[in-house]
Picture 1 (tube, one colour):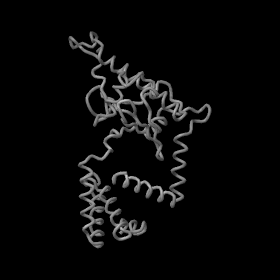
Picture 2 (tube, one colour):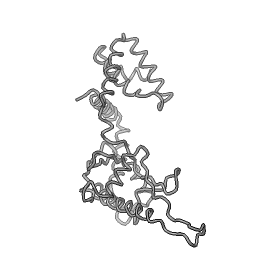
Picture 3 (cartoon, one colour):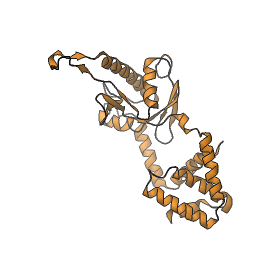
Picture 4 (tube, helix red, strand yellow):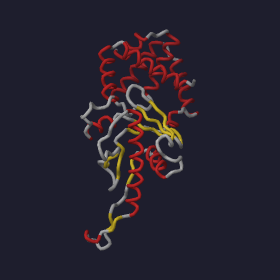
Length: 262
């Protein structure tokens, strides 16, 4: 197990411990998961808006050329091969359409222009074949994903439900998914460059005395709270600092919590 995996495992354990020590939060999480997974009462199908809220808690990720991950609340994760989702194989156009969107830095897709106007008059408009082809491909993917989610969670979707919607900004015809899209799984695998960064950061903390470590952690955590999107790998740096603190100075969970609250 590499150091990044150790850090992620340690953070997950810390979070689990925090939840277990706070009964109110634990009860609320269980309540949310129950509401999310259970089906509607007989004769009371979910509305499109209610289903949108449920779908918005899902995350899909590109896993490999032939599989993707579906993630949900409280650590739910399931890997699905393209065939289990109804695609013949990874070379079909529908599967390519889906994985292309999931891998994109901006996970959207575009149907293009629906009509062409040769003489500028609405009455003489011509339907664009490319638009129709893209729409049909997307509709096929939508139906396959709906069936997969129904099997996975026992959900019943409203009639003609779409797992995508118009993007609020962007070019004409652009659509986005209603579920969340995370970066591909392969992006989580540490690169040699990341390994070097981890070792360099670990060495920097290991050269500090305890008081200097505390000061560095306070500054790093303060900068992160002030500018959470502008501090690079601050959470990872904090995790490395805490790991070094445990090893060199015998820091307890209480000590680490006190450092963050100071």
